[in-house]
Amino acid sequence: MATKDADPDRAIWRQFCKDLERAGETVLSAPGAESPLDRAEGLRYLTRLLRIGLEMQLEWADPNCPGFYQASHETAKIGADNPDNQYLNATISPAQRYRIKGKRGTAPILTFATKANRYATDGTMVSTGELAIEDMNVRKDGTFEIIVAKEKPKGRINWLPMEDDSSLIVVRQTFLDRAKERPNTLSIELADGPPRPAVLTSEALAAGLKRTAAFAEGTAKTFVRWAELFKAEHLNQLNTLDQSMFQRAGGDPAIYYLHGYWRLAPGEMLEIKSPIPECQAWNFQLNNYWMESLDYRAHRIHTNSALATLDSHGGVTVVAAAEDPGYGNWLDTAGHTHGTMLWRWTNAQEHPMPRCRVLPLRKKKPQRAK
Image 1 (cartoon, rainbow, N blue to C red):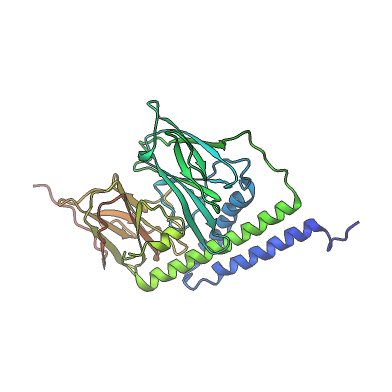
Image 2 (cartoon, rainbow, N blue to C red):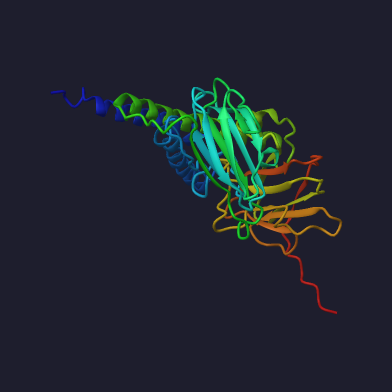
């Protein structure tokens, strides 16, 4: 009988705890975690990365038994997650072919992508195939099918390409007004037969836990690096022109991303003004230092092309502050004094740079009725 020290199950768990402890150092040593709130959110961020990693690398990691799961949502967030999005992921293998079945809801934007998910190694998630709903054949009743495969199928079949290193499908459906719009319904299956789930072994479990800790470490490193970069180069500005970094991290090629870093002292507000080009949609959001969207369940921390009130000349003014100053589209900093921020132009003809300035927080006096 094996001793406790030689017990292989204990060895797997102890190694996982060691790997996770090392992953945590990226967050615990982050230079920008200045306040008790930053540090508390950092520890929570580690638990969220762990939950996402376990879903991605263990629970839904079998490409022979595919299914959609949500990696980013209200309580699990990665890399400036979009409050307007529902994200769905599925693990895939280029050795297989897959069929996605769906029915259109009223969420206006729906995109599919295959990715080479390397967050656990070098912090990237490079695109290996893209498909948008407007480029697809959809039946009159709103239903559709997509074949996910390396080789293009014959006929007028919706095809989402894979490459030799494809390992993940990412679905983005974007809502402009969640209270009024219905989500698309989606499912995924093997195209060439029934699911063939693998029986869990100790070796597979150990490998999945190793990947989970590596995912947490790689993801944390990527977005702490981004936050520090934006703080150094784009303080209280939106001015990130080079899109290649965002595409390597899994960004949507239809979106032009303008990242920045905001910091406000007591009694200050950040005013952001922008013209609105011809586009499918736009949105803006406030994040914390860890590049998690602020809590949009309890606070208004983002706005978009359907929710915002435009200025008289057709542009838009957004105000980020601890209190509502009484003008513009106010976003609540939700107890934070600094963090990252992101403006998205989706399928825009132009990409204007919003003008940002820090102003004293003075509440606008209501106009008297004449």
